[in-house]
Structures are given as C-alpha cells and as structure tokens.
Image 1 (cartoon, rainbow, N blue to C red):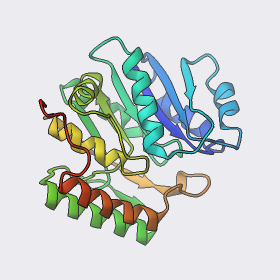
Image 2: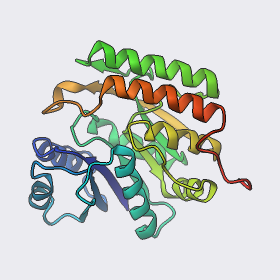
Image 3: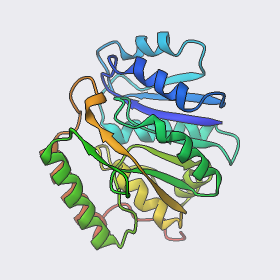
Image 4: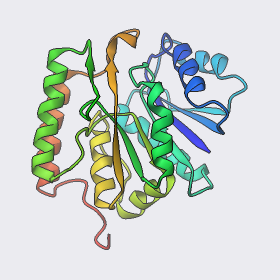
Length: 249
C-alpha cells in the first residue's frame, strides 16, 4: 500500500491537477490518499470529495489553522494507527503541484531497494529552481549550509515536503522520541529528517526541478517568520533544548 499524505490549506484550485498527476505517476498501485486539512475555507474538502470519489481517501482536520507541522503529525499518526504492512510506503508532498510527480516512479523504485527515506532534492545534481523568488532561494541555501555544518548532516536538501518514507522508519522514530513532530510550522520536515538520521535511516536524494509556475495562488510560506523559526530551531536543537530522543534511544 502507498499512502499519500498531503497537507492542504486553501488548495481548491490545485486539486484537479494534483489528482491527474498522481494517477499518471503511480497507475495500478494500491493507493490511499490522506489529506490533512489545516483549516481551509475555500471549499477544498468539497473538491476532494468530488475529485477523489471512488478513490480510497480520508480528510483529517479540526477546522482550525495550526500550521503544516500539525497537519503532517496528524496524518502520520493516522497512518501509523491504520497501516498494517511494514513494507507500506508513505509519500508526502505539497498539494500545490510544485512537487514533480514525474520523478515519483524513480523514488518508489529506490525505496524498494531498501532505502528508508527518499528525498526529492533541488540541490542534487540535475535539480534546481524555476521561477522561485530570490529571497526564498537565499533562505533555503543559507539554512541548508548552517544545518549541514552544525549537525554534520550529509544530505543536501533538508526541508522539502516531497519524500517517500518506509512505514518501518516512522515506527522507529515514534518509538525513539516522545513526539513524532513538535514543530507546527515549515520546520517540521527538518525536524523529522534529523530524527530519521538519529535512527540511522538509509537516505538517498533524487534530483528535482522546483517549478513554482505550476502553483495556482500564492505560496503559504512567510519568509521572515520562517527565517526566525530556522534560527530558533537551530539554537534550541543544537544546545539540546528541544527534540531530544528518549533516554534509552
């Protein structure tokens, strides 16, 4: 089974293209779509019911806006409760079509070779940005450099939503930490990546072009707020104030 965990926040204009892209990228596979709605007010849930009718899916959420970290944690916890096979895969990606579905078959094949986590990377050779703002690229590049230096992280992309996890890895992280994801904002992906590294996950990156032109509507990321969040996360995590594993892990 492949679970697609997709956080949504006012993505009604992107959902039709998302559905078409995923169905083309993974035809014939046993799929379950888990949408974690972070308080959409644009009819996204109604669109999901229409577009994914006949497909196995669920929409999670309490109607409030908590942030992508909360949305991901809600979805991961649901999957951990309902997935039955250790070989099940969890694909996480944005709902706004900036995740290139064309590379998904390669990511799934690599995961099948025994990798616990496969990352879509704009920094891997062959990847890159298209029509992305200078400030967003600057934030991404600077944050990656800092975290690779301070935490001795070998991977090049740290906060991308687009990933393939093995269920067994999520279970290992869940067993090793008091909380799967603490961060409510965009740093949630960096948090769970560091936890995966602590759990000795086998990780491989696949090059991807990030094409912001495919997105309808504005990005939900607030550059200044995210910049301050990166600095707080860096200091608190580096000095052991947050995201500590259980003592026996």
